[in-house]
Length: 323
Image: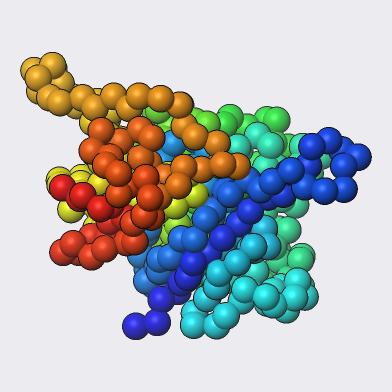
């Protein structure tokens, strides 16, 4: 089966100048630095990691909101890495994004009807029954009152605004959606509702998701597989059940040890792994394994040789000494 999305050695570097007037760049922020994975039709790949690890940049680069610095991006088997913006337009109806901030991602001067109708207008599509009817159907599908068609974003709560963003993203029935931390700005009571909505929409439309988050509990609920990122690189990628039951990479193990356990007795006795030191700068990442400066298992080899993703069962792990 052809993957809906496949990336090979994907890289995205942002040039940095010493000041606004400088012509020469002082270096590069290596936001995404050579990652490879694929997503099957109907699959949800979770992507987790600390803030600044490059997961949002990876998602935006895959759908070409950012132009990649290097590597390859394939969509339904077609290489879209270097196609022009005009040629990319035909792919926009097939790939969409749900933004993290439901407050900043909606134009405050536009009504909800106009916001959700934007994909139809941009792609010059007139749905059967008209745009207004299609928009109201979408509103109802995501749990909004269709009668609120002419209201403005400030009249809605954070959870309702995220539903508006979701309705906009599914308007053209895309095959692939990047969900960029879609619940991180919401109250915990609302997060479960949005996750269940995305789950239902995936079942109904058969979409694939790249679900980006820093909350490992949320990712566990919705993802088929999980990729763990650190300093622009993938440390481990594995089926969800395998990764949460028996992580192979020290960084994955440290992340999972920070997730609270509901049982107080288990919480008191379980092992907690504290990472020492600050996150290194993506402008000047460590040589060898990028995690070696914070890893309790690091040896000389880790500081010299960069580990490749090695297959261990159904998992792939970038570590010289996996568990």
